[in-house]
Image (cartoon, rainbow, N blue to C red; front, side, top):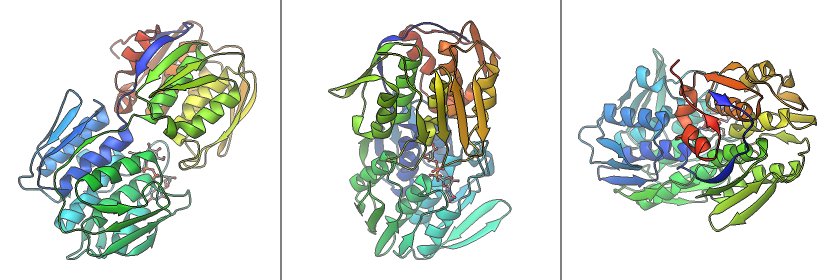
Length: 416
Ligand code: UD1
C-alpha cells in the first residue's frame, strides 16, 4: 500500500546485483572446494538458486549477506522441473554441471510473461563445445565425454544473451583448449561472473567486450568474491527520487555501470552528481519528455524500461519508449493506464503522453520490473495505491519497501 505525494529525501545503500549473484552461485558447482560470496542480497531468486544448489547436493547457505558454499558431497546432474520452472535463471546451472560432470539434465525453463525467451543460443554454445543435446520430456539432456574449446558466434535476433554467455563461459572453463565467444554479452554482471571464475583459477580474457576468450583448465578451486552493486536497483531509486521531486544520495554505486541511464535522466532534466562511490540525484526543474530504446549493455537496460515509463507518465509532453530486447514487455501499460496514465502501445513502442498527475488505484504486478514501476507510480499518485502480487518485487529487490520508507515514503504491507 502506498500513499502518494511525499518527496523522498535522504540516503540509501544499494544491495548486491541479483543478475550477478545468480550465475555466480551456480558457478560454485564447478569446484569441490569451499567458496565464500559476500554482498549477497536476500532475495526470493537468491533463495531459489540456493535451493537448487542444495537439491543438486551442494551445501550452500545465506547468512547476513554471505553465502558459504561448502565442498560438494555428491553432485547430481539433474535439475528438476519444479525448481527450474520457478526461475529462468536456474537454467544457468547447466553450464557448470556440464563442465564439471560432463553431463547434465536440466528442465527447460519455459516462457514467461515478458516473452517467449528461448534458450537456443545456450544450446548452440554447448553443441559447439562438443556436447550432444537432446530434448526429452521437457528436459535438456546434455552429454559430452570430452568438452573441447571452439570458436562460436552467440548473437541472436535480439543481440547478445546474458545467461547464454554466462552458461557457455562456465562450461568452457573446464573444456580442453581455447573457446572464443563472439557476440558475447558485455553486461557488468557477466564481467563479475568472469572475475569470480578467474579467482577460481579460470583463464578468461576479453570479458566486458563482445569477444571473450576462455582457455580451459583441468580444475577450478574455491574462491571468495564480493558481488557488484545492483545497477537496476540504483536506477529504480533514481527514478523514485525524480518522480517524487526529491533529493537522495545513493551509496555503494558503480557509477560506470549507469552510463545510458544517467544520460537519459540528465536529458530529462535531472541534477546528478557523482561522489566517491555514491550518486546524488535531485529534482531540479520540470522534467522534459524523452525517447529511449532498450538495447544490450552499454545501451539502455530493458530492466529499467518499465520504471522509466512511470516517470514519463507524469512528465508533460510525448515520450516514446522502444523495447528492442523483449518486444512484448509491456504488461505494465494497462496497469499504469488504470492509474490515469495516457499510454498507447504500438508494437514494440509505447507512446506516453505525460499528464499532470496519476491517481492511486488497485493495480496488479505482472513481473519483477513491472511491479517496481507500479510502486514508483504509487509514490507520486494522488491517494492510495494498492499493488498486489508483490512477490514479484521480492524476487529482485532487497527490502525496497523499508528503503523507500526510510526515505520518507508512506508505504506499508498488508496481507493479500
Ligand atoms: C538477463 C537478465 C534479465 C534481463 C535480460 C536482458 C539475469 C538473471 N537476467 O536475462 O534481468 O532482462 O538479461 O538484459 O541475468 N534470446 C534468444 N535465445 C537465447 C537466449 C536469449 O533468442 O538462447 C533472446 C531473448 O528472448 C531476449 C534476448 O535474447 O530477446 C536477450 O535475452 P537474454 O540476454 O538471454 O536474457 P536473460 O539472460 O534470460
